[in-house]
Image 1 (tube, rainbow, N blue to C red):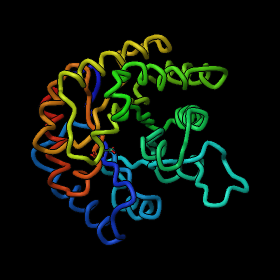
Image 2: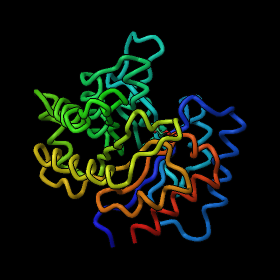
Image 3: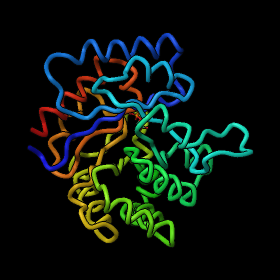
Length: 263
Ligand code: PGA
């Protein structure tokens, strides 16, 4: 049995009608039956379809997560949705996705608060990191990864975060997603992804006692065709999938690739 159970996330982003969302949940449940998939599967639908998804997926092996959520528990924040509210519906959370960084200009302050609150609530918490194209072309990839990891472990909140991770290292997942590969059809070279995953695990060891228990996903144009290449990598434990997660067959093929590749 592998030390780290493979984990594949389906980030639906701002996609899907209500009908489409419920159909996709039903199809995933029906089609996932055979052959057995020994991969943890987490879906991240838009907020508005979470209740429908929670009803359909309740008691199933598919977990439900939110794409974002505020650490503040309640208050005068128009449009805000708190982790306290979400925790009644979901048991997982994405933090720091590159689209939150670029479209909403969100930064480390928010991410470290979210990571701490989510882990304190026992949510399966995925922190997304990765370099953009300019950073990659300037040879800054490792520097960016080091900064994105180090910054959330700084100060009092960072100290609290390290404690929360040490308490339950299996609840933290790091998604390595080169920004230039997200939604573009461009895929990182598996050898580069392995090097970066190994680097991320080493960086995490500066803050946490059991980096070998923290799962690392690759994200960026993962499809059923290339999933096997990433599943074969020693330090890659799963994938965070955007576009290909909107189709049940494609998404489950990716889940199966990690199930086979890791056992
Ligand atoms: P993609 O998205 O699979 O469509 O590239 C990945 C992500 O944003 O998590």
